[in-house]
Image (cartoon, rainbow, N blue to C red; front, side, top):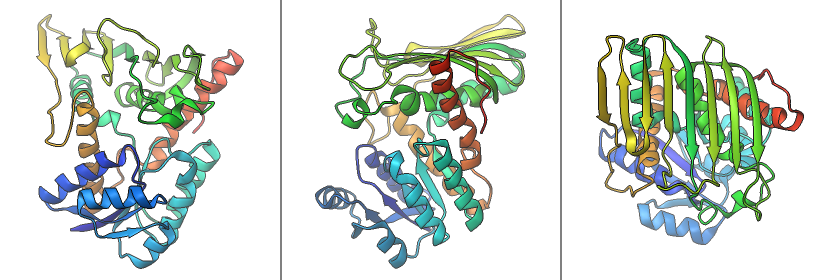
Length: 344
């Protein structure tokens, strides 16, 4: 069984730890044996909840004392580079929460540090692991609707994300960096890499520092044009948080993943299929977070499989630099009014 440690016991870490507990209880391929957090009270509370005896306030001390097969970094972006470099110095493989870093320079340095150490790095870019989105990707890959030429990936909500993560209201960059990175990654996952991006951003909520609305037009290298839109300012008749909606038009048919995880596909033979892609409600999950919580379990399983097989994970550091480049391109385009060619 692989032995791992988790750094950062904040808002989202319980999802990681519940998923790791499921993996340990299921196929027994991995478990978390140590925790680290600078907040002593929070550390003690999480350790007691998950029955983890070995706890540390200092990551360097933990990495020096523990014999680890991997470390799961679940802290905010400004701390990632230092923590990854500590792990790389000990040649401990790393799975790291998104966004990978606050700047593209730091993101590249993180990837380079792991490359020099010869260790795998996976970014916890979990949206593409949501089972409804995996099902959409499988349909596109099957050729049932022909060659896609237009798509839309949409996440629009008025959900109060600030209550659980108050720091989101303080950053000068908000929705593109925090949420848009996920939705842009889904667009890459479904339609391939991106050669051009045009973005318009807006701040609707008055008492936040960054943007809470983003609309982006992407030109993909294989000819697909997609629209990626994100909002935390949309007062909809039905609150859809945290659902991602997808529309695809292709040469021989079309696909729609609509509210309530309702899938409709018109295939090349004119047949129309409807299907409910609602994700399962795991024993520790709660609505409406259950689709994200399932994706945490699925991505961590993929990480373990990659470690055991010695293969590069799908959301490796190198792959994530391409998604990170889209985030940077969105801010540049919004600031200049120009179409930008992303550079990873």
